[in-house]
Image 1 (cartoon, rainbow, N blue to C red):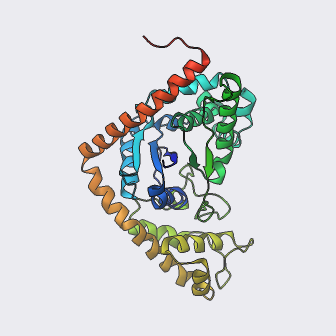
Image 2: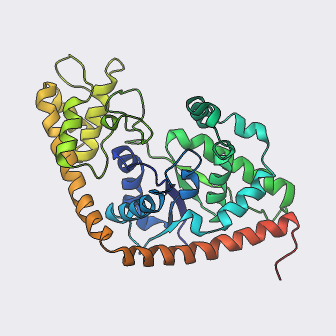
Image 3: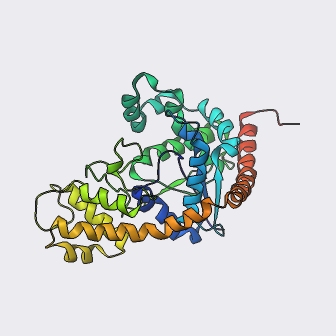
Length: 335
């Protein structure tokens, strides 16, 4: 039986090249090897201030982009997190098992809490427990994560082990412990405005990222204005030139060329010669995705049927896990 993978994307802001090259494209390339569950994590989306007028539409957008990027329903299940009530219910049970100090030391919470000040919600602190619930409900063998999410997966394993130790039996653990699935190449695509910072949906500047739905003109404008340096000749892995390394890596990933081929092609180039190459590679990579997306968004009935089927399949598995956990914790079964 194929190993199971669970991953998800929040329906907030636009998906960008960092999301695609660091995660989604990898899912597409390896999906035939696994039993995949890809979730639109709309419960996570409200851990920070959100616009209720756009949440549902943004959820459709992520689901359509999954499909447009190449997620194949023959190997993968797509569903919406809030459509499966077991996510919220298991999160509460795990809250009562997870020590508070485990959450307080999470790096992402500390970083986001500084930005939000007095507006920090309990949900933001508790985000990793909900993430643990997402993963553990489906008995995921592997979880594709970037370097910034490794700490959350480690916490998931710690919560699972703590639950097993306290409530499981020696030959009958409550939870399976998931492993990270990390692909180094392209795992961190950096900002167009700062080669030392990860490309992010939360960056206030649209110029920092190329969104999957950006027009060719927008892509050209963003690459034209992205941060570079005055050095002639382009090369990888120079710590003094983070923007150069980032843009060359982007070109390598988008063009499908090897690192060696890109290094040889670009070693004598100036930025004025290189940027049109990067622009063309980005436009051509995104063109088929955008065309498929536009088609899917005119077929809401089809999207609804996919999400309904995904909900039913995900719920069946999640409820089995939830029942096992509640039994281990000593709850009276439902009548």
